[in-house]
Length: 216
Image (cartoon, rainbow, N blue to C red):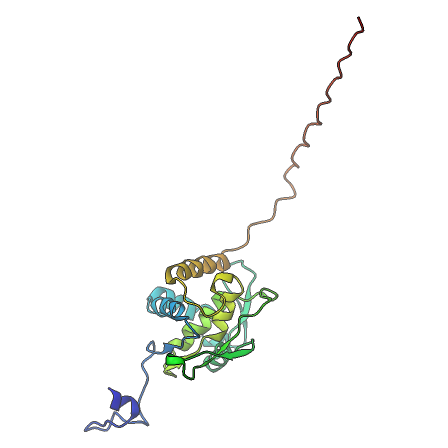
């Protein structure tokens, strides 16, 4: 297997080589940013749930919708532009924050990771849109690994507990992710109807009567 990955192996018919080595969709890895392996394990598990994966891959329609704004969910009012897979990959791996170097194993040289921002929530970003981008990239069969900067930064906007690069509980992250997805895909509650009569006003407060004391 190692020889096949590095292209040093060959077969009699010449189908296994560097030039024609094909990556299998769904086998792409997700790089850790510090100790974010709990996020990666949840994402990889959900990625291999067929119904979940297909829903988010087709969230903005097929290739005919490329360049068009598509509403996420029904009646949610959230519209996003569908882009090609190359743009999805560039957007997913582009960090909007100042990067810092994380230590590797044994204190050696590590990878660059975005610093958690101090002020989060100024711009409304969709976790569903980032899941759509991530699922398309994971199942594109174009790379061996991807760094999900944009997805992690969208998570930082909603839950302070997951900000930074400390180890967290995978089950808690899964509960947050599913709850956030349900919130974004649910239409907002309807405004109160103007035809309904207004509620009656509250009764006025009672005044206490003062008792008069007679002089003896």
